[in-house]
Image (cartoon, each protein chain N blue to C red):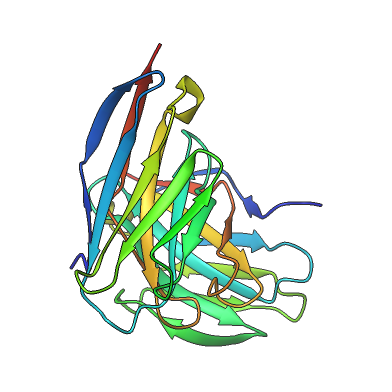
Length: 114
Length: 111
């Protein structure tokens, strides 16, 4: 059974640029959540999608956006990158938003903004 | 704003010892409390989870203790092994796909 696949694994971008990260969830999982992980803030919830609809959103600025496709694959986009956006971005796949069986996380995309 | 407070930030335990990590939450609407284990270069992996109608849950060497009135829960790792060296996160959730995570505890098990 394939796990959660996130691409790319590493990314270096310049301030002001935009970036798109991709996540392929476990087959059959229709819920995809995104988290930002930093040493100082831990894991912070970005947003959650289920069947192409955003169900929940965290407290991040509008520069952070996402979408989900009909095959459950999800992308998140960060526009006008800032140095503080440097982080590990984790995608979490689940059947039900993690409420009964928890999440299966990908290995993340390490974004460095210079 | 950390709604789930986790302590300690790090701990060192000898092989065979007990590791204890504590978490406290504020929102009484939370009804699912998982613990995740994360190794360097990997995403967190679900370890064990509990609901507030149960005071304790055990899976192998890992036990969650839950105190609903105190709004606290803890992870006990019995007979700690070097392979348990990792960062552990508690989490609390009360609605689809939106969890509050603790800041993490780095556990080091010495041989």
